[in-house]
Image 1 (cartoon, one colour):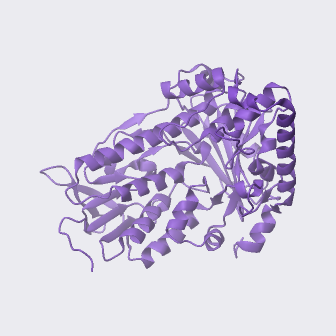
Image 2 (spheres, rainbow, N blue to C red):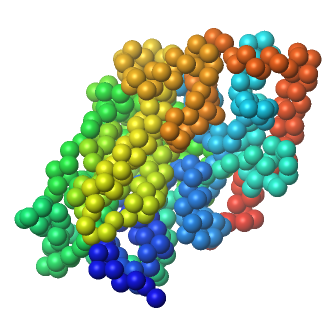
Length: 506
């Protein structure tokens, strides 16, 4: 029997569909159920969404698993593929390339992560590329994929992965999931937002067709517009473009890549970078750039010159401003997705931030009294998460050695947040990396980017010298050999998909 507490939220109104809206609707309908409260989602087919293809990070698996979504069915329905990491080309210098892997490097000994041992090996002039010690990197370079194997002490047990998929198809897939669990979709465009005179909370929204939709909790998934959180509540925006100056993107789909890569590629250009996201039926491409240093026409030209295969549509330009709302949760409105802030997709964090916002909303789900302590805690932890991801993305620009354009010269000499500078100083002086406040990116990620782009550690951890040279050299040689053989044993990415999760229409 459900406890009918009169203080419970009875009506949740989600404004906007797309990935953010339907991820929110699916999760809330799964957790709350139709008997707990009414969940309505308002969207208009006349308003497009930004996503043309999405790359994710491994935590997306937790979202799908929590909802009980079958992985193979999900991939079939979304033209999905797998990814083992992100390849960065021309970031440290022109001609430089490295992969940020999802799994770890080598194997840990005692209390220390493997990168500490690799830094000793590197200092002794035995190795230049830590990627030789990563099963995810070696698998990606071979265009291979397999599920983590249940083999103790095997590199194949350390495989960690995420997905590429068509964002519009993912939204459609989740819409079906949510509607089966009682979510009511309302087709329409919002004309006005009505605030309560006594406290300026949102009371209702008026649609252009005359409908009035009342709610207790409103969730803003309207993208950059921020229809509720900004246009109605004037929440404010914290601009981070002095650290992340890219403010534009031009996108275009192209034909499918063969062989099918099991990684995302991010290639740096003279005023930004280009993504490549390989799906089963096509490839998503985009060029992120700063229009202070490059015109739209030049950005389109660079994108089209660097696309593999036939282009399938006209290029589309998108404008954005990197930063966050001053409050993610204001009064009875929570912003999720692009309405909450924007982080360029360099490390595939867009969907993670949607997922994280949803999970924290569920953990702090309010009564209709909307206790300020709950709202403040939500804003505090989301701000910490955005800031930590912001610093990691700034890292890519700051530690580049490129000086071949005005854009890269700006990035090289710009002052960065103190939180990031401390991490850079610590690694450079001592080879140490610490994860602060359980931040999203761990020491493996920070090491991959810092070393990959040429930031050199002057020292390494003294405890790694406790192993004598002969045993240490044998240990490092054996790990490299085992990882090499293990990567050879993996299935080709295309073959794995054909066997397990091929879409019916490609």
